[in-house]
Structure formats: C-alpha cells, structure tokens
Image (cartoon, rainbow, N blue to C red; front, top):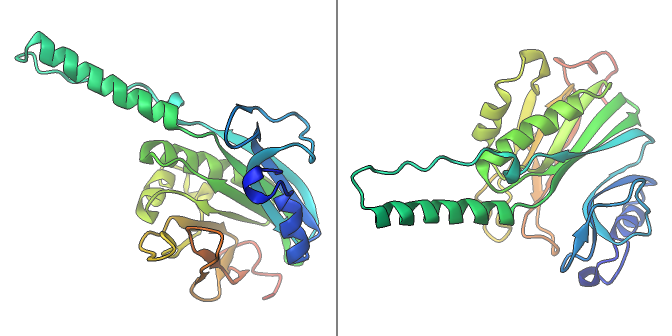
Amino acid sequence: MYQARSGNLNQVKQVSDILDMDYWEYAPIFSGHIVGLHHNPRSPFARSERGYGLALFSRFPIRRSLSLSLPGYKSLPRTAVAIDNQSTLLERASTRVRALAKDYKGRMKNQARIVQGAVIDSPLGTVALGNTHLETQSKVAKRQARLAWQSLHSLDADAYLLAGDFNLTPKTVDSALAVLPESQRPTFHYFAQTFPAADPRHPLDQLLVSGLQTRNAPQTQRLSISDHLAVIYDLSPSSRGSFSDRGDQ
C-alpha cells in the first residue's frame, strides 16, 4: 500500500481492477514504510494508509474476513546450551556466547507473520479461503502452519482452502498437521516446484484443501514480478467433501 518501491500505488486496488474482481480484502502486517520504522496498523485499518500485508481477491461476495497474527520466533522457548564439563572456562563462555548470538540473530531477523482469511459466497456454497506467508525457520513455520489451518477451519463454511508460501517441505507440513484430530486435518495437500523462479526446485508454495479437489495437476507460470512461480489450481467438488451434492462447477 503506497510504497515507494511500487510507485506509491495502492497495489491491491490495481490488481483488483486488472483482474476485474470487485471483491477484495487487504490484511496489513504493519503500517509505514518498508524501509524504516514500522508500527501496528490502526484498527479499523484505513485503506488510504501506507502499509504492507496480504491481499485476496474474489469475483463473488465476501461474507466476512479475518486477520490473525501468528506466533513467531520470539514465542519459542530459548534453546538450552549443552556444555561439556571437561572444557575450559573460556571454552564454555565462548560456546554460550555463540549460542546466545545465534538465538538473538534469529529473533531479530524474525518477521511479523499473519494468516488472512475470508468466507466467500460462491456458486458452490461458502468457501473459507486463507492466505499466508510463513516464517523461514522450520520450527516456527510448523507452529504457524498448524495455527493458520486451525483458524481457517474454525470458520463456518462448506469448504476450506489455505494457500501461500509455507517455507516448509510438504512432508514437514503434513507432520505439523498430523497432531490435529482427524476431523480437523485437510483432506488434500497440493504443491508444485515454484522456487527459485529461474530454476524451480523447491515446493514452497502449497495448498491445503477440504471439501474440494483438483481436476488435474497444478500449472505454474513465471511472472516478471516475483522470484517464485505463480501456481494455478483448477478445483472441483470433492467426493469426500461437503460439496459433493452441489454438482461439478
């Protein structure tokens, strides 16, 4: 929103106009300039305010939306430092300092992360659509993935989709969600090799789904504006989901 690096444009409105999607939601992560001081966004957020965050778009009415902060690196307990009792006092001190420095660096590099959600009235029924970008530290991202899916699944809808850059391998995401009751786990987990865009090797951009399924394999497309590939999913009602009696659209 109104950042110098993008010509001080309201990028959400620009994308909405280009895609001809009248319904959109913007969830700010912070207000202010990307380079410089940040502060928490106002509540309610003014759409004319400079900021940085997530957005989603729809051709169908959005019934309600949510924006939830995800716990970051700072919320994790500090790692205990194992020190060999046979080492010298200087070696022990050096080991502890290196461990504390690594921990401090991780906490300072941590970015604020959120999950954005919206319940959309589609021709197939209500769809709870989630959008997120998780932390780069695996331990943090696993907790965030679980909470993001749970928060979306708590909405009252016929189907649920959570998409975004998970910064995790699909196997790690599955293990993070395996601790949930079976009724709360996604029915399907889709992904494609998307990063880096020039030579995609890592499936960072993933989709968790309940109530829908893909018709075919996801399609990827390289854009001029990202170091990730875009992913296109063609979804239809799932025979295992709550949309199965609404027909194939």
